[in-house]
Amino acid sequence: MKVIILAGGGGTRLFPLSRKCLPKQFLKLDNKDSLLTRTVQRFLEIVKPNDIVVVTNEAYFFHVKSELIACGAEKAHILLEPAARNTAPAIGLAVRYCMDLLDVPPTEALFVTPADHVIEPQATFKAAVRHSAEMAEKGYIVTFGILPDKPETGYGYIQAGEPCQYGFRVDSFREKPDLATAESYLAAGNYYWNSGMFVFTLNCIMEELQRHQPAIYNLLAAGWEEVIDRFDEMPKISIDYAVAEKSDKVITIPFTGYWNDIGSWDSIYDILPKDEQGNGLQGDCLPIDCTNSLLLGRSRLIAGIGLEDVLVVETDDVILVAKKGESQKVKDLVETLKIQGRKEAEEHTTVYRPWGSSTVLNEGEGYKTKKVTVNPGEKLSLQLHYHRSEHWIVLSGTAKVTMNGQEHMVHENNSIFVPQATKHRLENPGKIPLEMIEVQNGRYLEEDDIVRFDDEYGRD
Image (cartoon, rainbow, N blue to C red; front, side, top):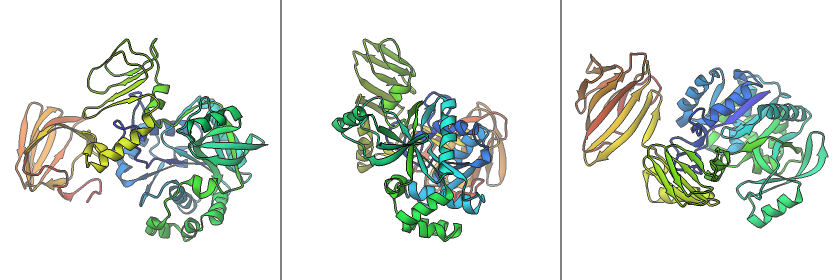
């Protein structure tokens, strides 16, 4: 079996923690492992690392690479989508990759899963995976159905029909319902939440794409190079709309363990441990007379008084306050911020790079102050800035700075000045992270004022 992990989404439903530059699959909600790492680890007990293909986009390549190395899965494959085209083309791309570059037999099962779900316990999941692979090899498209425990309006539903060995044939897929409809689904007893996980063989999915999505199939049938060159011609469509809702080969296997797609702040509240008053707390929080609320902090004290059924999420540049049950509207908030041209819609103050990270501490007219961290052995590109100078003060570690061909070693509590329009490079030659304060001065301080001459990471 091969495992296809979809990790290219730039989700907005967990704003302000999740943003385009750091979507939810990379979030460490328990301050330990990211959701992507958890997903990879879940499958490392089932398949070898080189049986895993992570589909993402160029912007997240180094994020994915570092996650895979950290969890011992560096031999997993990273597949970059040439363009964003929703899940059906992304899965098609992975299918063609498995066929042409991995020589996967046409009767082998592929397990397709999002990168950002919480699933427990592992033993129950492994048994469900084994059953799903068995049914897929018999020619079915298998999806996991989650037995609902409440009338959830944020999920799509699967209507189960006649029994079929480990599960049921699927009568229909239903869109996210209103509350009354969700309550009727719960009462009926044969409706399941759509988990978004699918299992099928290469033969089966190609046949179903040929039947139901010839535009995708014809491009896939042309071969790997053609798919890459013309991927942007793919229709933007989900695998649910493209195949699952049309095929007569779909069955659902009920998953009896715990599942959460972490699709809203209400979902985060559900998975966090609670105090005696039912509050989910993370970070430096002081609740007084608060009940059934979420207080999640990152850099400051959150003090709540008399809150009930309230969600409070703090980052260093945004504080979100919402009523429980209303967190699905966060995506509307993000769209409003985009329309207003607010940078908070897409960027954190901390930006992660292949070499480390930088955090904006303060900025104003003609200046910007950052904290820069360079990982051991990493180096920035050889570059210059036409419109700004930079002053670097080393807090810890050692900086190797090259300016106009001359090397300078800068140690803790020392500094160096990089004049405007000077070709320079910053490296960390040491064994510990290099941390420093960067003070930028100039009339234009945006990140596109970088002219690169040489780069270890292949960036233009």
